[in-house]
Amino acid sequence: MKLVDEFRDPDKAQALATHIREVLPKVMADRRRTLQIMEFCGGHTHTIFKFGLEELLPEGIELVHGPGCPVCVLPMGRIDDAIAIAHQPNVIFTTFGDAMRVPGSRQSLLQAKADGADIRMVYSPTDALALARQHPEKRVVFFALGFETTMPSTALTVLQAEKEGLGNFSLFCNHITTVPTIKAVLDSPAMQIDGFIAPGHVSMVVGEQPFQFVAGHYNKPIVIAGFEPLDILQALSMLIDQFAESRCEVANQYTRVAPPEGNPAGLAAIHKVFELREFFEWRGLGSIDHSGVKMRPAFAQFDAECIFDVPNVRIADPKSAQCGEVVKGVIKPWECKVFGKACTPQTPVGALMVSSEGACAAYYNYGKHIPRVDALRFDATE
Amino acid sequence: MCLGIPGQIVAIIDADNGIAKVDVSGVKRDVNIACVRRPDEADTALIGIWVLVHVGFAMSRIDEQEAAKTLALLDQLGEIQPELNAMRETATS
Ligand code: SF4
Image 1: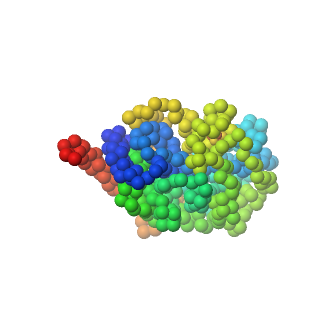
Image 2: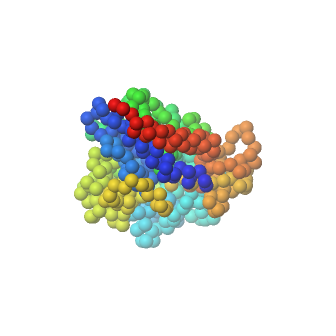
Image 3: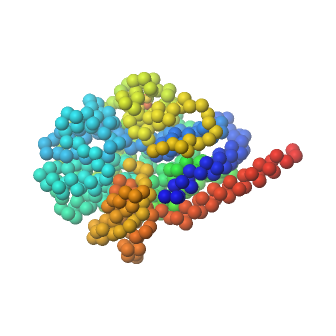
C-alpha cells in the first residue's frame, strides 16, 4: 500500500526531527533534567529500534520503553498454567507464535511441545475455532493474550463458538487492560516520565476518552500515535509543542485508524464476554488491580480456568532478572546484570528478551552499540 | 499480534457470520468484519475499502482522507522548514 511508504519518507522524518530540535530549547530552558517520554506500547518500541529513531532525537529527550508488550509481561505462573492445561488429556492447546518461547518456571510452551504436548501455533483465534470444528473429540483451548487491541477478536470468537454450540472450544484468558497499567506506572515512586505516546491500536478500540486522566489528573500530555516512523516522530513533535506552549491534552496523531470514539462493535463484544479481574499479576511489575479481564460467568462453559484444574501458583521472577526496573524506565536494558550474557533472545531469562517488541530484545537485535547516525535506517526489512 | 496489517476487502464470503475475503499484499484470507460493519450500510458497500487486519479480524477502516490530512501536514512542515532556516541565517540578533 502506497500509504505505508509515504509514512516512511526520510525527508519528512528529517523535517520533523528538525522541528523537535528547534522547539526543544524552549522546553528545556526551565528544566533541570532530560525530558522523559514513555512509549507505552511494544509496537512503538519495535519501530523506534528498527528505524533507529532515537538517533534522530536531540540531546535532552529520552525515550522510556514501557510495559506494553503483552507477551513480555506475562508472568511465569501463567505460562506454567498454560502448560498444565496443554498436558491434560485430549487437549489441543493453541497460541500465537509470540508466546511459544516465553519462559515458565520449568519450561516454555515450545519445550512442552517437544515433550509431547499438543501445542499448535495459530495466526488467529478463528483458526483455533476451526480446529474445534474439525476435532469434535478434542478439547481445543486458545491462549488469549493482549491488550484491548486483541480483546474484540477473542470475544467475537467466543460469541461465534456459542452461536455454533461448539462445546469443545475454550479460552485461557490472559487479556490485560491498558489504563490501570499506565496508572500503575504513573503511581510508581521512581517514576519521572513527563509525557506519553499512547498505543494507537488500543485507542482504535477504546477511543480517546480513557486516556483523559493522564492529562487531566496527572498533568502529563499524551499523544495517541500510529506505528510508522513518521507517526512516532510526529507524535513526539506534538508532545514537544504541548510542553513548549504549556498545554496538557490528549491528542490524536493516528486519526486515520483510531477514531475518537473507538470501535463500538468491538467494545460491545468485549463487554458482553469479559469482566474486570480484581487483580492480575505482571511479570516485573507485580500485581496491578483491575489490570486484567476474565470471562463473565455466563460464558463459564468456554472458560478454560473453569473447565481445567490450573495450578494458579505465583512464581517469583529469577533474582538476576531486572525486567521490572527496565519496564518502569528505572534502568536501561543493557544495565541489567544478565543482559547479553545469560540473557539473550536465544536464552531468555526474562520475557523482555523473548518478543521483538520487548525492550531488551530490541536493544539486543538493533544494537545500542551502533554509532549515532543522521539518517534513518529505511532499508530495514521486516 | 498487536501491529496489524492493511488489506483491502475484495468480497463478502459469509454475511451471516460476518466473514469477508481480504487481500493483504496479494495474500487472500477470510477475515471477520464485525468490527468494521456499520448498521446503516449494506455489506456490499464494504467491498473495496481498506481495513487494518489484526489476527484475522478487520479492526478498523483506514480513513484515506484522514491519512491524506496527516501527510499534508507533514508536507507543510517540510516546506516551512527551509524558509525558517533561511530566516534564521539572515536574522540579526
Ligand atoms: S536482560 Fe533479560 S533479565 Fe534483564 S531485564 Fe532484560 S529480559 Fe529481563
